[in-house]
Structure formats: structure tokens, C-alpha cells
Image 1: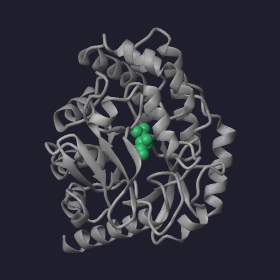
Image 2 (image 1 turned 60 degrees about the vertical axis):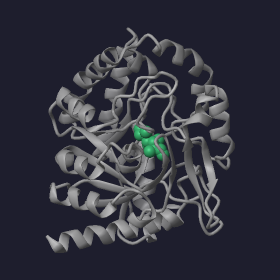
Image 3 (image 1 turned 135 degrees about the horizontal axis):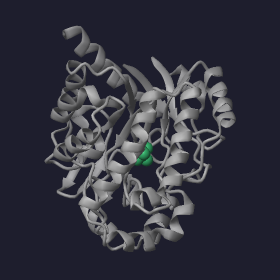
Image 4 (image 1 turned 90 degrees about the vertical axis):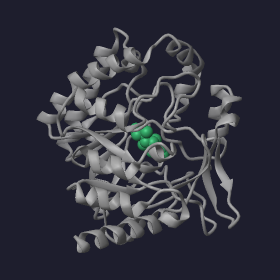
Amino acid sequence: MKMILRWFPHNDDSVTLTQIAQTPCITGVATCLPKIPVGEVWPLETLKALKEEINGAGLEMEVIESVNIHEDIKKGLPSRDEYIQNYIDTIKNLSETGVRCLCYNFMPVMDWVRSDLAHRLPDGSYVLSYRHENLAEMTPLSMADSMLDKAEGFSLPGWEPDRFDQMAADIMFYQDVSEEMYWDNIRYFLEAVIPVAEAWDVRMAIHPDDPPWSLFGLPKLINNAENIRRFLSIYDSPYNGLTLCSGSLGADANNDVAAMAAEFANRINFAHLRNLKRVSTYDFDESAHPSRCGDLDMFEIVKALYDGGFDAYVRPDHGRMIWGEVARPGYGLYDRALGACYLLGLWEAVSKMA
Ligand code: DNO
């Protein structure tokens, strides 16, 4: 198991590589090139320069989060072949730079969603929170505005401004896309891309839908054990794997995240481990990582991974904003560093108990 932290390049992060390297037992970062428009090939030279910078700080660049998928691929349009070819070329460039794991998602139109990126808890810390009714009342544009409004001037992964103009039209488009049609589009992508990932030794790791239920009538498919089973069986290869995101899946109380960790352990190529507190069926606040701070039993999840033979990348996920830190929501240093140490402690405990 390798413990890593997410980091954004090109002066778009309040956290430095040196700070990450000084955090105990962190071996590398999960990073990205957010300025490259979705659908274009990630250039080898840019990747090499990024790797050099990261390696220079004593850290590895083995994980990319994320290469986003062009909407035409998700929509199943004829132009998808061109974008799939670009995705394939990007995978080859990533491989040549030493990347071994690629986290991505297949969420239509928008990536993760929250109604408040700075929800104040009684202890004065700030967390990401989700209130379903507040979101249902918003338009996609007002939602994007409210997300960016609290981003402290940093870019928000998955909320790149170049998506905004198209959002309303894209949402309309998907009203006629059935879940089975969307499964077909996923299959088409996997059948083209996974053989290349195998040949170039880059393990793909699909991120679950966050939240794991539908909003604006959009298809959401990577959201529970049954659908993940189906997804993994579409292309039965360790290179067609999962990012087990405990916080995304765990927002739905029907999802037993530890059971999923146990069942899918040998197909989990990346784990995002964080906790949350459910407020009602479709409402939740993110929380500090330890089990007693939220509704998820982090010990059971880590134990299930360990017992299942999991041997890939883990990162703490969104942290709270604490100790007066100003950072991209969810991605400050302090609470994620606390989370990493806690998760490393759990891992050491379960491995010594085994
Ligand atoms: C949010 C992240 C997501 C994730 C993508 C993966 O903070 O977990 O943006 O990186 O969904 O493609």
C-alpha cells in the first residue's frame, strides 16, 4: 500500500510539495493537468516536466487524478472515436512518464456536487456539505457559481469553467438517454481503452458517482455494489478497476462500504478514504476521518482492504478546514495530514494483527 496526497500543479495549490514530503510516510502525489481542455492529448513534455518537479521534492508521480472524459464519449456521439483516440494517446504518454494508475469518472455533465463548500460545524471548522433540496432548487449555472464562490480562488476539480456554457443543454440531452444506453457508452469506452491500459501498464480506476444518486434526471450508474459488479464484469481485467471512494459510496446508507472493499479488493486500484455524517436520507456533512467522527467504520473498511489483499494507492480524502487554513475546499494540508496519519495507523494495526 502506498499513501499519497492529491496535489495541484502550476501554483494552483496552497499546499507545497515540500509540505507533502514532510508528512509522515507519504510516497507521492495524485496530480493532474487541469488546464488542458478535456478531450485533448496530454503532452509528453509537459508530463515529463511535472514528473521532474515532483520527483525533485522526493515524491512519486504514479497516480493521475483525473483525465476527464469528453462529454461526446459519455453521450455516445459519432465524434467519440476521435476523443477516445486522444484518451488512448494520453494513456501512452502517462505510461512513458511512469504513471501506473489513472483515476477518472463517467459522471454525465458534472463531477462531484455539494450544496455548500464551507459549512460551519459547531467546533468552528468548515466542511463540504450536501443538502439535496437546496441543489434541486438551483439551475446548473447557479450551482456552478455557488461552488466556485467558495473555492478561495483555486480551480475546482471537475468544475472547469469551460463546462458551464454547455451544462443546461447537456442536462437536456441526457433526459433521453436511458441507463441501458449509458451502460452501452461505458462499454464502448472500456472496450477501446482497457486493452491499451493493459499493454501500457496503467491501471484504470473509475471513481464512483458523487453523490451516489441521480440529480437533474442524469444517469448515475457507478453507485452501488450491484452496478459496480456489472461495471467490473464488462471488461474482466485488473486494469479495469475501481477507485473505492468511501465518502462517495457511503453517503447512501444502503451501501456497506466495508463489504464492497472486501468484495472488490483485488479490483481496487486506488482508495479515497474519508468519513461523513449523514443528516437525513439524502443530506450529509463531510467529517474528520476517524470512525467516531462520522457514520463510517474506517477500521472495518481498512481491514477489509487489507484482508482482501489490496496493494495499491490510498489517499486521505477531503479534509475539514481547520486551524485557520485557507485552501481549496476539501484540499487543505492540516486535516488531510491528520487523516493520512490516522489511516496509516489503522493500516499498521490491521497488518500487525493479521
Ligand atoms: C472530488 C474528487 C473528484 C474525483 C473525480 C475523479 O474531490 O474526488 O473530483 O477526482 O471524480 O475523476
